[in-house]
Amino acid sequence: MTTRIELCSADAVAEGAALKVETNGLALAVFNVDGEFYVTDDLCTHGPGSLSEGYIEGDVVECNFHNGQFNIRTGEVISPPCMIPIKTYPTRVENGKVVIDI
Ligand code: FES
Image (cartoon, rainbow, N blue to C red; front, side):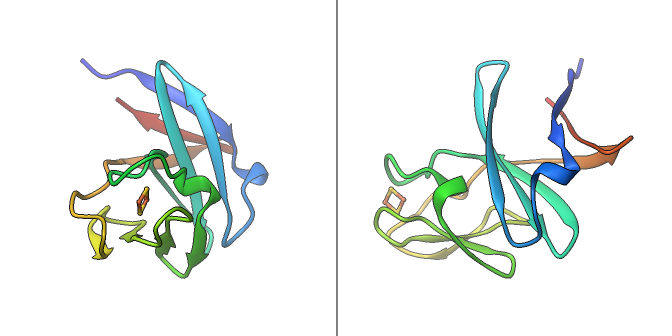
């Protein structure tokens, strides 16, 4: 069974930016890549970095701790020292809200 979670207003995340949202025991990063929304875990798989505070270039986020990089759309590792992909969540916008199912 899945749980529908409203994370934030789509207006709250500008293109090329990210927002940290904590809900349901999760710490998530909501990204706006060219008007499309993507949600990943906020915590870097390599350490204490918060990806919502990382540097965003297109669909890549660079952790501001040791500069590892992930693809925002797929979660795959783009650049070390990260080795483990970041978890991603199927994301949609409903009535102006960013929504995921967990
Ligand atoms: S904590 Fe993110 S790259 Fe090390």
